[in-house]
Length: 222
Length: 178
Image 1 (cartoon, rainbow over the protein chains, first blue to last red):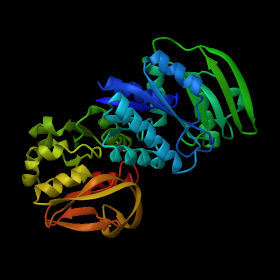
Image 2 (image 1 turned 60 degrees about the horizontal axis):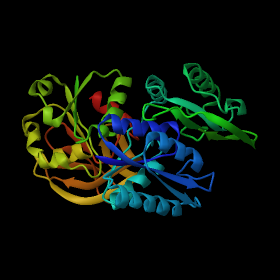
Image 3 (image 1 turned 135 degrees about the vertical axis):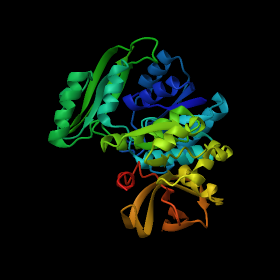
Image 4 (image 1 turned 90 degrees about the vertical axis):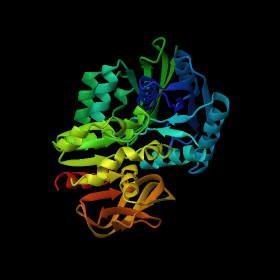
């Protein structure tokens, strides 16, 4: 089935894309929604240049749609982008990295239904520990580019997530009750390499900003 | 042993509609075996103590075209739980009628009578465009729009329109403990 992947550049949407391909579906394009609202209920806030680089090494076209991130209005922007993918890339289905959010999943389901498209959520209800194991086993190289929770220190920014880091996160999880796969927005991740990439992305430069429990690292990748 | 019958047409949907059920069974140490309805072996049904029929995606009604694959249900006496599409199958096998009702997302359901340990108001996760009504089933729960939980009047066959593998996982556990 020809699919578009709702793509933020983080671990969930990239792994969902990997699974779509693994189960013999064809990814014809990526869709990224760039929200101006960091508090958006629907979308992470990836930077345009980074997802462009990822699309480049995946050898896939990418539709980028900016949204002001106003509740419900951002859904119209998402629908517009998916409609664009249907017209220009002939998609029959949309793939998302939704894990637990009924809010996000049900809204994408409604849009797909309106546009007569299938909707796939291959990570739906997935156990966080199993998700990390699958990612690491399949060679996903992931770094943390945002933290926003007690226990998730600024020092985690830029750190690669390996077995040791997953154990550290489990420790933070038991002490501070963070969600182990960051469903509550505890952290944002960025995929530097995975089986879908033709080459590894290298971090060239970074800039850290934020305050208290909320920090972000803007990166340039090559 | 539970026979878990898969209904999705695309294997990628198994991860969304079958695996969450398998994970609940595993977590509760319930022995199970999964099989797609098109590759169902009669031996599996014979060996199983109970049967669960999964749901599938909004657009995937392929199983309705192959409803005759489920004729074995008519002769079955073992407890069956049909989830969403699985409930539609149960209803259709017993002369039910399909109707169009769409519900997507969290929805309030009211259980009028005890149903697999559920009573009163519950918030459930819905994902359906269709609903089934069969005179051979009694209605146990309703939402604002349609029937949500049914039980066959003579056999231990249960159907839920919503997805207990997403919210209300206990319903599945209670079924396995029947």
